[in-house]
Amino acid sequence: MSRWLSSVLVVLAAAGCGSEAVESTDTPDTGGDDTSVVEDEGAPDTTTPGDSAMDTSGAVDTSTGSDTMESSDTASSEVAVSDAPATEAATDATSSDGGCVAPTTLCSGKCIDVLADPANCGACAKKCAGTQYCSSGLCCSGGWVNCGGKCIYPLNDSLNCGGCGVKCATGGFCSSGSCACAATMTNCSGACVGTAYDENNCGTCGNKCPATANCLTGKCTCPVGQVICSGKCVATATDVANCGSCGKACASGEKCVSGVCGP
Image 1 (tube, rainbow, N blue to C red):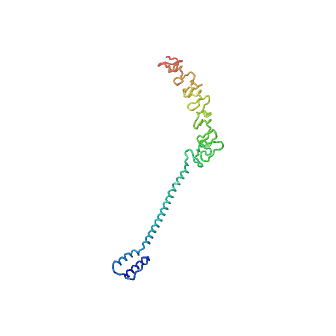
Image 2: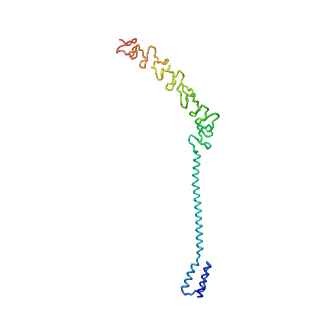
Image 3: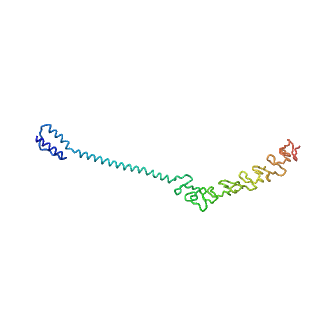
């Protein structure tokens, strides 16, 4: 009994000292089940479950923290990379057109109508001098306008009379912005003509005189002794087709003498 008790004490002392186990020099009683119970109870005690659990927990914590930091850094880097192009694109878009609508242009941060602004006439910072104003992007003096890139005065310009591209008739002139012909002339098909003597517009536009006639005081006049019959100058005194008057024809074989048909 004393040996058994001594063995139990030795085993308990060994378990309490941790990793340094003291083997008993006493040989326990081989009496059976008691020895088996003591050895079964002592075997688990020689392990260090606390140390193993602590090491394992620490390893997990360290791994988890490292993974979390790396993941966070990677995500932050990816966001920064994806944001940069979007910002640059927005800046480029703003600087390229400024949101201005034609014919306005971005000048010093403002949308300016360069076709009418005397301080930015035709382009930013292009200022008209003195009393000039901006006419369709060109600096012109008062009353003058931009026609085809030139300043003209539409009140007396026969090529731009009253407005760009309005041409006066040939021989005419521009007066107070309106095309006019001289007092003795008439505008016929875009030309100022004297209907009193124009053989193609004799007396009125489009009245053409016969080839041998002249236009005198607005009337087509054939040579002396001739009259106009069917657009021709004929001598009714001798013309068998117009004997004595236009359209009076002599019979076959007859002659017209002094305006009379006869043998």
